[in-house]
Length: 98
Image (cartoon, rainbow, N blue to C red; front, side, top):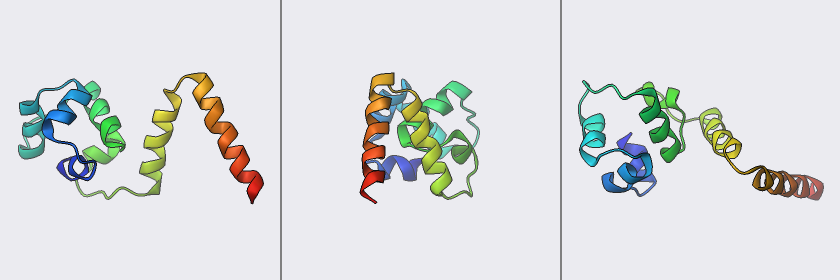
C-alpha cells in the first residue's frame, strides 16, 4: 500500500482524506500485520490508489495490465452516463484514426 501511495504522491493525510480514514489507521495498515480493514475501507483505498482490492490483499503481486484495467473500468463505471458517453466517443474517434 505504501508503495502505491508514494507513487501517487500522496501523504498519509491525503490518502486518509480520499478514503475517509484516519491517518493513524492507514499508518497501521502500512506498518502492522494485525489490522484487517473492512471491505468498504479496502475498496476505498484500492480506488484511491488505482488498484484492485485483490491486488492489495496479495502482498506478493505486482500490478499488471489486468489490475490496471480493472481499476480503470471501476472508475469508468462510476462516472455519470454523459461522461461515459464522451469517453466512448473519444475512443471511437481514436479507433477511426488507425
